[in-house]
Length: 298
Ligand code: NAP
Image 1: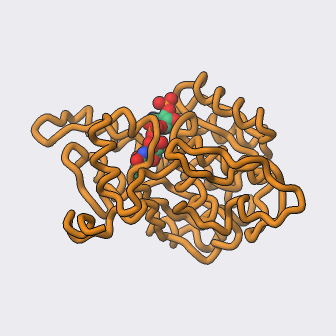
Image 2: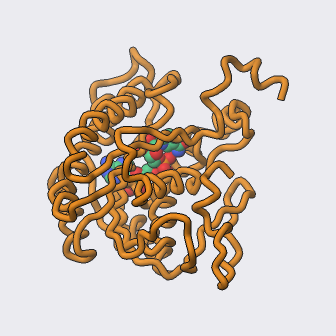
Image 3: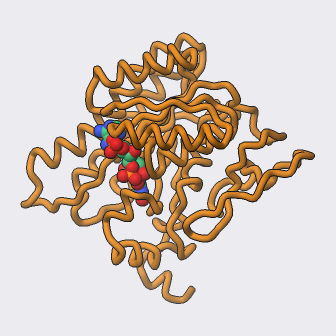
């Protein structure tokens, strides 16, 4: 498993053994247990967390992992029914979760999302700005509408969510912001995703200056850079793409949503308080080979 082993409940020395770990789609086991126990990180229990794009995929994984550690989680997505289903799932496992319909590209939606967290969860401690879209369009075929859809959701949405949460994070005297970027853009490129790569690299430019401005308020902002993570969104790209990407990863598997969620959990922890404006790549080693030849001898 690629996530920090020290965080997972499978290393939990609690006298109350955790129930069987959830089985991932890749067949591995990951410790998402709703039992409380000792942890090497200070508990985030009771903290108010907003996760955007939380009805599916990585965002849902982040919401589930944070809720499993006792956080009160607000799940936001455009489709309220799906966000509610994800929140119901968390509640059925003993977590605290509410759902809100919000388009991250719309300031009024974001204001309502943040207001709901303040009213129902007593404030905002942690923002996971995760909502993103990745429709493919090559240059020459990409319309201005295609470009705007991706930049508005991925980059403008990050700014709007951070901006709306700031007064509440400042009021707490400390805060954590974790942005879901990507390897695509900051490190790599892929045909069809020039707009996407620009949005994801743009998020890193954003956090580097934001980190400086927010430092006096004891607020950190960092990013996770997932490689190929098996989500509903990635599955929609197609079986052939998934197979080729799996072959391109030294660990020979796609990532799970929990792989990313545990990296986000670390960045949101008290212990990560001196880390800001930084990135964690979660990709099973995908960006490392100099060429495909480096993988042929494995
Ligand atoms: P996904 O399975 O397609 O889920 C996307 C989530 O974002 C859904 O909950 C979706 O719900 C929500 N969303 C989309 N547009 C939104 C908007 N305008 N406002 C609010 N919510 C919105 O995607 P994913 O694979 O989990 O990706 C999540 C994030 O990880 C994205 O930022 C993506 O760029 C990044 N990422 C993913 C991978 C990967 O391999 N999967 C790799 C690198 C980075 P609604 O449609 O209902 O709004």
